[in-house]
Amino acid sequence: MATTQIRVLIQLAMIDGELAEAEQKALHDIAKRHGLSTADIEEIMAENSAQGPELGDLSDDDKFEYMYSLVQLMKVDGRMKEPEIKFVTSLATRLGYDEAVLFELVTKVHNDTSIEMDREVLKRKVQSYLK
Image (tube, rainbow, N blue to C red):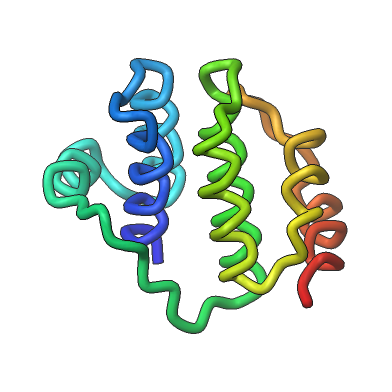
C-alpha cells in the first residue's frame, strides 16, 4: 500500500511539471512514516508513470491515509493550484468519497508534515463522507 500511495503523491507533486524542494521533503517525510527508505522513494520516483494508480480494495483507514497525505502534500508549498485540486478531487471520488471531503481536509490538515494532530477524530469525520 505504501508504494502505491507514494506513487500517487508523486503524481500530485509533478502535476505542475516540477518537483519543488518542499514537495520533495514532504514526500520523503511521508515515505519514512510508512517505513520506506530514501532509496525506496528515489526508486519509486525514477519509475513513476503518468498512468492512474491501481487502488484495489483499500480499507477505510487506507483511504483516509491517502487523502490525508494528498492534502498535506498539496498544501506544502503554501499554494493549492487548480490542477492539484482537480487531481485530489478526482482521486477522492475514485476512493468513494463525496467531493466535499476535500474542503474538510483542507481546513484541518497542516502543510507541515511534522505537526501531528488527533488523526482518529479527523478520520471519523472524514469517513462520514464515504458514499
